[in-house]
Length: 380
Image (cartoon, rainbow, N blue to C red; front, side):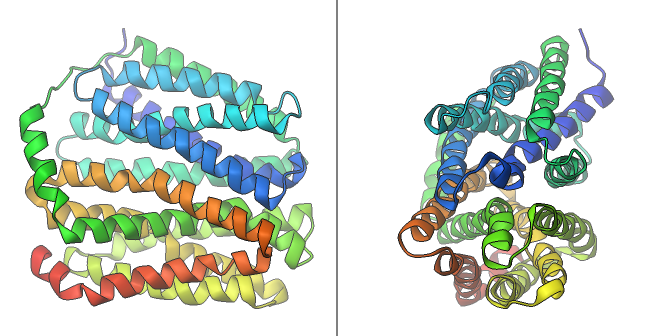
C-alpha cells in the first residue's frame, strides 16, 4: 500500500503528461499513418466523445470512490489502447480504439485535479497549474520524440503504453481517504447555476478555446505540408514551436496575471488570437511562419486556465461545481470544432476550413466584450 503524498502527486503529473501525449499523437503522427484531414477530424471527434463520457463518470464517482482506483482503471484502459492502436491498418477498428484512448485520457482529467485539491489544501491553484502544464509538456515531448526517432511513431506509442501500465500498477497500490459530498447540496447548486448567464458564456468560451488549441494541434502539420510546402521534419518543427509557445505562455501569462486583470487578459488573448491565427493560416510568410506560430501558441496558452479561474472567482461559494461544469466544455470543444473542420475540409477545402480558428476566437472576444460589465460586477 502506497500513501506517500509526494509519490501520488508525481503520479498525477505523469498521468497528465500522457494525457498530453494521447491528445497530440494524431496531430504528430497523422502524416506518417497516412490520415487525411477528414480522418483526422473523425479521430479527434471520437477521442473526445470517449473523453467526455469519462470526465462525467469519473468526476461523479470521485466523490464516493477511491480516486487512485479510478485512475488505475483509466490507466489500464489507456495502456491497452495505446498498445493496440494501429497494430492493423483498419481505419474503423482504430477509430474504435481511439474512443477508448479518449476514455483513458478523460479519467485523468476527471480525477487528478480533484485529487490534488484533496491532498494540497493550501496550494490548490499551484498544483493544478503544474498539473495542466504537464499536458502541454507531454504533447511537446511526443512530437520531439517522433522527430528524433525519425518518425517511428509506433515505437513511441508502444513505449508509452508500457509506462502507462506501470502508472496503473502504482495507482492500484495507492491509497487515499475518501471524501463524500452531499448530493442534495450539489443538486441545489446545479439548479441555481442553470439560470446563470455568465456560466453559459464561459462554457461557450471554453468550447472555443479548446477547439482553437486542440484543433490547431491536430491539423497544423497537415496544413504546413499541404498548403505551405513544408516536409515531414519541418512541419513537425512547426508543431513543436506551437506547443513551445503554449508552454511559455502558461508560465508567463499565469505568473503576470493578477486577480483584477483576469477578465481583461482573457479578452486580450482572444483578440490577439484572432489576429495571429489569421496570420498563421492565411499569410504565406515563409520562415517567419514559425514566429507567427510561436506567438499564436502564446495567445491561446493561458485562456483555459484563466477561464477556469474566472469561473471559480465569479461563483466563489460554489467554485468546485462551476469548474466541473466548465470542464464539460473541454470534450464538447474537442468534438465540435474538429468535426466541423473535418466536414469543411472534405466538402469545401482545407483553406476555407481553417477560417474556423480566427472566427471562434473573434466570437469569444465579442461575447465577453458585450457582457464585460456583468462579469466585472460579479468578480469585483
